[in-house]
Figure (tube, rainbow, N blue to C red):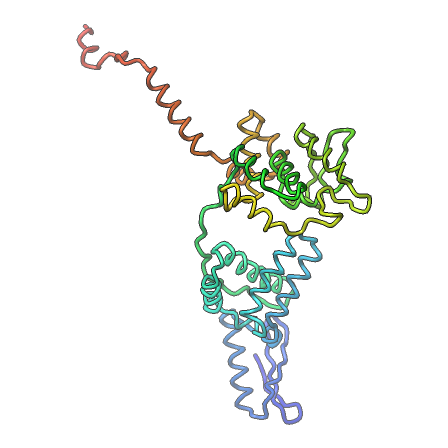
Length: 355
């Protein structure tokens, strides 16, 4: 049910959807334009693909504002990463209507980002961010449906890097200044995430009680953690006490300033150690593996490192080539000890004894 009417010289249309009347200007003085628009709206309503005038005005920038507001209200720690993803999305979709962001255009975006040497995982995070922006727009009433998105790109297997103890010592030897060595030591013996280590404050340190209490607001999982000080961790913190400044709350700092970017120093140390490509996060995987190897129960190990899901912890509890070799050697040794003579009597022979 609908109608066409005029306001001044301009034609308008009116139609009903879900019992509610919608009125819309054609911005035209031609009645044929009004007839065409009304038929279009009827078709959209019948096929459940209704797009009203409000949705036609929603721009990509509106999607960006919506998701940024959502991140802010929820206090998500990934805001910095989200802004980086949106920066790349803006290059492709800035000034575009949300309705014009079609699957084909998203595929073009995927192809362009791959040409720019972005990894499949990075591209997937960016397109997922865009899809999330659409979902937020639907929840807020700006849009009625989330458009279909193309298939995600196939990602390589999760990184499985870790440090053998000699490798850790080799990289440590070449790290300068000394505060970087302390960061590496803490990460290696705690298994904490990089940001949890570099952002550590003295308010979280109890030297008298020999315990470290991670602030829940600094944890990726929003869960506080308690880490008793092992002797290596205690030695790290004693060195940091000696370097402590009253004008700085940070445990790890450079001349009183927060450690923001030390990638060049890290890369140089790894290169000098003959281990290019190593990452500080490899210490987290290494700690998970070493905790299990040392006989620590998995539940306790997960609490120490802050792993909430078993799947991720299992992925970090990496099995090295030496572990695999030891496994097959133990299998071979076990088989070698098995009896070489048959202890089960053949069926036919057993039958002859029956009478």
